[in-house]
Length: 251
Image 1: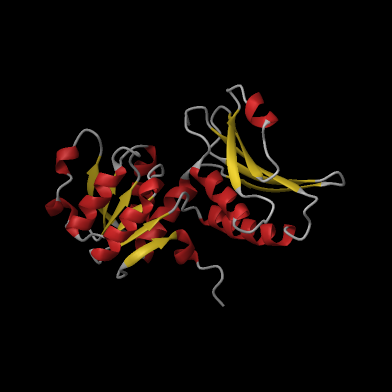
Image 2 (image 1 turned 30 degrees about the vertical axis):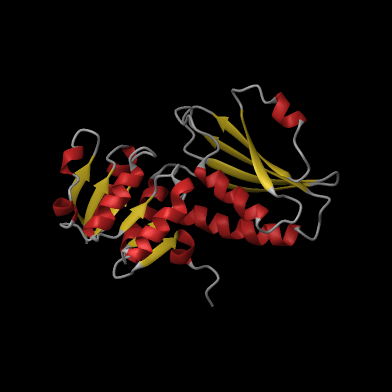
């Protein structure tokens, strides 16, 4: 499989290594130094594009792939406000796109079990729930895309929560915490040294506490998942999420 890498930072280089280890070929790499090389002609040398750039460039990269008719795997977050527009464009132009806040196999197992757990805990409303996410200090945005997906999985399956709110440890969060409503799900973001990513769902009551946690040891799981998504989308047309690829509900 021939791959175009759109975004060639730490994640792009890790994807390159895993892809070549799996006997795929990188035919194009695009970074901020060679944006002029992102052309339809160059993209059409690839069977699939993997997009891990920035929220400022991702939409343009997606549209360029649609123009070239090249399937695209999107790991960049921060563009979901345009999700419906991109979905419509993808379907109207008969292209293929798969996106996820996190392509890691382990995280997607976590996403699925999180939804199952929320359905179960719906029977026990005397438990309150919150989400905690920990990342390296270089991660300036909060909450993480993974934490948002976790929160949405809880809200969709738990009657007591209708929206999430976020606190970041370096800020003064007293007003947010004091005004937190019972139907709001707290996502607490912590930034600690070089932590690749830890996400915990906490159900707490006067009787006991239940914690459900995923800890990433490094970023290779994210990169492997993106390559698996590139392999999966071959020959497909449509707009997909990682749920479609993993399909845990299949019999």
